[in-house]
Length: 130
Length: 158
Image (tube, rainbow over all chains, first blue to last red; front, side):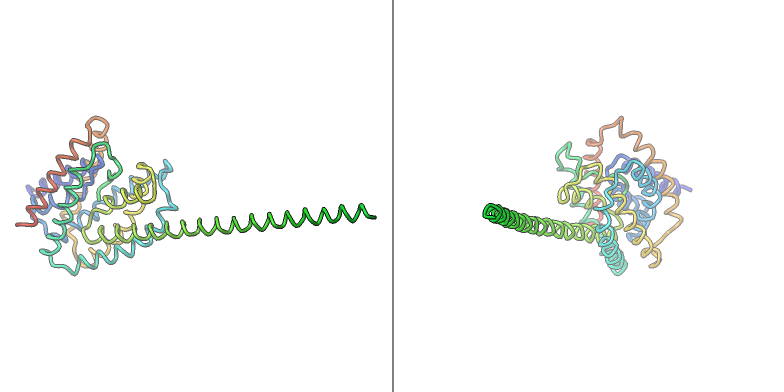
């Protein structure tokens, strides 16, 4: 019961931040690890699955508003799928401890980048989650 | 007779000139097409590079795809911010489905945690989108950048 409440709250707060365009995944994963003691691979899997329904809703709205550049997106998606297959297999081959350290390093760079980015430079804002 | 000859000669002359002009134009067009093709090719290479890196990071860390794809499309492909945001979702959604499928197949999945987080996330996401018009995001961004740095250091040392 208590754990359920903690999990719901972590999702809720990450959702608010993601909804405001500050990138939910980089908050959700460390929050799961620090406050719910989730294993690294599981925390990443939660973020991936959690992103899917939210992204579908956002995508429908964007398609209706004709905001998507499909001509640019298509080659990126095709090469991206190859990257995703490689990245996920790589993650599965790493130990929990090694993956956590690598993630932490990535998070540190992202955090420093966010901290020192010029105000008003909205180019790197991320709409939904990941 | 003589006059006719002269006019036909003039006609031939002007026809030659036209041909020369045509050829020149054709060559110019060829060069132009070559340059355009070169630009197109290098743009495709950029697209492929953006896709590969975005997919790799998103698969490896289960997050961060948008953080790479959005600035990359703005800076390298010259998309405007709104279009880049919307387009990034159309890119990251299929990549995330592929990655999630592989995580589940490797039995890295805990549905009990996932559905609780997702429920909270949907409610929070709705509220966040509403709050955006009231609360300035740039102050929150600094706060959460602080959290990210704190979490990173904790995860590196503990």
